[in-house]
Length: 504
Image (cartoon, rainbow, N blue to C red; front, side, top):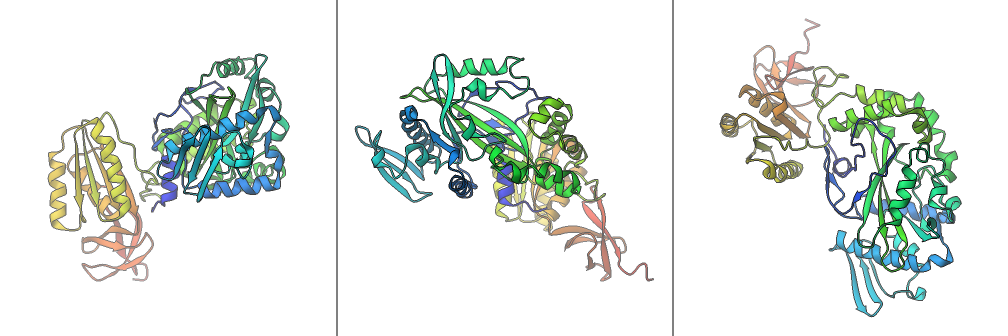
């Protein structure tokens, strides 16, 4: 299976939210701007993230605002906070994307802002509304993928008095503007009786400038739809019924785990609190390619209390989601296609408990080089690491080099192989022959168009292009042979036999 760069990036940067096999509401805050390692990759190194979805999400935001201006509001007393938020975000963008975004001081309260990704160069005077093409909060939210809410603190309470929210998860910013933090969270089950919302409120009031925190929140969404606001319920609400009538393949493709990374920042000049809310979506079919995520998400959904599942709007398909994930085959032979390897769409995580690493990169695919470099960088931190680069294990010299490297591997070595399907299967078979066990082996296939074929008649094994069911000519005996859906991990090959056997 060939993985696209977009799919790889979605998994690698996904902020998987579950730290246990059960889930309950909690404040779950931690200091921001530090990397979080996951089973699929890494996230969280910067407060604001610009990724491959940047231009598309900004286009969606503009369309939503044009159709519904109530998604943006700044109450009059929040104008200073809006300027404070804009400058704070510009500073964070300069840290996150220094090559494309720059904030330069020109004088007292005079600045130049440059965003090369959007071809913007703007001089402005802080606090002077005439120096920008639009209001400061509106201006900066057209350049970030995060939704933004600004909370004013007065009389011992917090009030949502400004913001721009285009990617709401079943709530209405236009309705909530001016409400207190405690009032907005009133409908959430359990948070009051268990004291969660009160603790969160007190924590927010104690926030200090220059000490950002973050937390995650999650739900599920049908389709890759960022805007599931209350205002648009007639458009997305029927999906909750529809999804119960689709086949399993469509179900895994349409149902998404939806995670919000919420950054909590006390603004230095105004004292307001800024919520940055970044939304990430990952379909179950991609989530299931990371085995640890597949298992844990299934457990969380199966155990989730009904009142919480109902509030999140997933109660109608929560159980099917758990069942789908439990039935999804891991990255070994697929239960839907017995005998066939099912390759992961994201590289395996480096095991920090390994005694050593042997990383094998076969072929010239740029993705092979990228994956092997990522493995090496992580492995070298944990244990002695060797990188073996080969053209193809079809060549005798390369195969001998591989066998020699495997023979030198000590007990506890993790062997990680990246390349095309033919090379990976042959290399895995060689590793097993050298004594490696399943827990010591990881692989990532960049191109599944070729495979090793074993002819049942001449006992010849060779590389061919095709998939099970195809008919090809055997190089050894010149027969027309059919590739069967039957793979031997020991041989590292697919079985083939005469295509005309039934006629004979």
